[in-house]
Length: 346
Image (cartoon, rainbow, N blue to C red; front, side, top):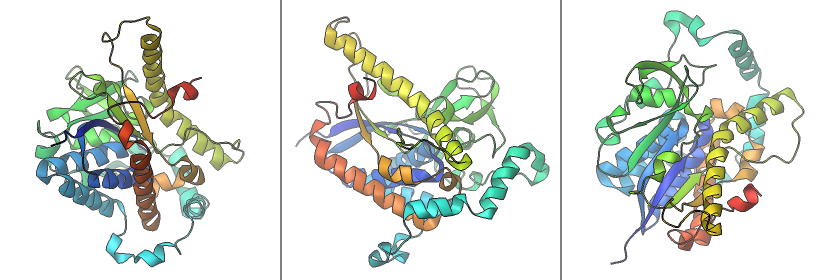
């Protein structure tokens, strides 16, 4: 029997655009011969990762796919069976939907209110809408020592550094902290995994989106598959206030990932040049699954407003991107890197 190809998954955060990752995972879970050894996730990536991990521990790939379907049905996705396949061709273009939301008066008013009003101003009326969903996760399985290792990134407000929760440290509050945008939600207070002291946490995307370094452990395979949902490049210079805010959001949520990828590329160069001895540092192989063309058509508006039809379209786009990756690069897994870091940092 052929041994499965072992990989690590790095799941980016990006609000409701995390439905793209839902689709990627759905397709990967269909593929024979791939074993997920470790998962690192931030924000939406942490939610996807928790659903994935619990399902794999519960009953394998099919349970994981059902868990992910449940998660996104709670966030706002349509039941796929309620949308005939022929109708998908007539859905509005994702970019049209995104920009319609961006210029809708309720969204504009909500954005203006968020700039003038702190989430703390709501007092007893405050509620994090993700609490109900996250509290339904089976944390006995999310935190289990069985199945893939699972890491959740969040940002410590006090020192501005990344914190990584794993094992029994992962809780409802840890996942809510990982997805805590400070203009929308109150900081989440919970024990710091580093010190044990109670700290306030914000979204992990500011400092690790997602954190890659937990995947560097020797027990894990050398292949890291990054599912990227924030476009690295935009060819057009943003000019409108909405476009400028959107690009700032993308740059800030890619910055930490780019830093870690640059460090990996640096170590690869040192190994190639013989400056450090082979075996003294892990030679990681990076792979990326993304659809920058699609994400360039979207805006930050649909990260915070989950439009059901768009979530389903993002899932289908994720499935296509994963299918293309497997067709072109499955043979690279376990043997060579498919992401061109040299070109990225050339």
